[in-house]
Structures are given as C-alpha cells and as structure tokens.
Image (cartoon, rainbow, N blue to C red; front, side, top):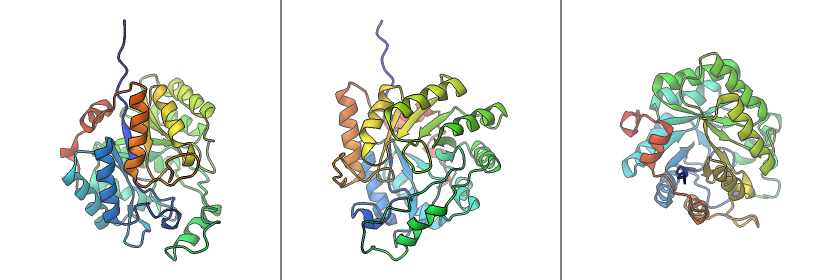
Length: 311
C-alpha cells in the first residue's frame, strides 16, 4: 500500500547575525529591508520565517522596539509562522539574547543545544572597504569567541519557552549537543515535541557533508526517539544539496541569507531570500514533495497559533 509522504516545511532565515552588509548588497540590513524580504520569502513558499533584528546601520540588535516593529509588520501582512532567534549575535549577553521570548511570546524560537567556538573571523579578508565601520571588528573578534549556552542557560531558555507556549527549535551544531538534549529530556526539562535544526558547517562545529548529516539524523532518533522532527541548515554554497538530503530523509528544509549568500555553488550571489526559497521549492516539487503552507506547518509542529503571540 502506498503511504503518502508528509509535506515539507520550508523555513527562510532572513538576515541572521553572521553575515555583514559588505559581503552582499542583497543582504537585508535594516528593519524595513528585513520586513520586505520576509514577506517576499513567505509569498515564494516559506511557511516559517526566522527573524534576527538589525538596526538602521545594519548591526544585529535585540532592541525590543525594533523587534516589535519587524514582527508586527510581518504578522500584519501575512500568515507566516515567525520564529525568533535566541542566538542573538556575538558580544550579546545571555540575558539580552533570551529577553525576546518573554517579551514577544512567539510561536517558536531557536534554543541552542550547547556551547561552542563559533568563529567567522575571516569573512572580510577579501574586502578592502566595509559599508559600515563596525563590521571588521565585529567579525574578527570571533577568533576568540565562545558562544555560551551552559546547562543553566539552556534550562532557563527551555523553561521560559515552555511557560510562554513557544516551541523550542533546537539548534544543534555538533554531535555532543544531541546528548545535551537527551539529558535535558531525561530530566523533564524538555516537555514539548522535539524539533531539531541541524547546523553543519560553522567553524567550531560539525562539518557540512552528506555523511555527517546522515549520521546526525540517525543518532538523533536513537537518542530522542523516532517521533522527532527536524530540519537542516545548508551553510554557504552547499545549501541546496544539504537541504535536498534533509527532505529525502524525512526532514524539513531551511534556506535564507542568514545561512548562505549564494544561489549556486559557483558563488553567484542570491538576489533575495525569495530567490532561494523558489529554488528549493522547485527542487522539492520536482522530486514529488508537497510543500506545507503556514497553517499546515502549525499543525505539524503543534504550534499555539498566531493569535497567541505577544506582538
């Protein structure tokens, strides 16, 4: 008997906090550009929009006024599921990063699964002049940066999301972080359905290749149960190959200029988040996958619904 495949959720990570404006003129670099790019990505087929905020000078921020403006503007214009970062940006305190959850009570938000050396200090080595003065120091300081997510931090983050009815999207950068989640689940801190975002390819974490992703999916099921749901980030030029592999192995996909600035492996810059969404959608549909809309994504991920957020 034929068993119909589940639909695939496409997420779009609009701007992130790693890439800086000097790397691409197409990177959304201020609140209005983030809003417009998010709306275009949703129209192109992204059921979930992952949001970091930037100020008028392109710098990542957790300013609540800017965040509210971005979130409320997107929500007013479309029905997308909006996920909020708790990763923030390098140099932010743990308190800064987590403050947006209690403030805005989103449907879902990132929950980082452990500490790591999150390094991108060489991003600007081939750039002579930057658009903004803050960029070079911002990336170079990650050479001596530890992205802190202690067990205390993780417990606080997850409990806060539980209290707010916000689904944690567990960002897993390396193998040991799966064991962190197993421990937190055994301790009864993880109470909601497990949704993992695999993030290969960050300097300091697991490599981005097919073998690694397959291993991580297998181990996640062994540690956390076959009923988990998951997605994968495809960093840089490997975005579309890894996303396709994720879908072929029962997962969802995430594209967007937070993760990669390119539209193909040759290094051609993507003109928009929507262009990346359209490409992965075309790939998936050519493989006979059906794409979930936002309401279907809410059902699949057991989300509380757009009416219950705080923005």
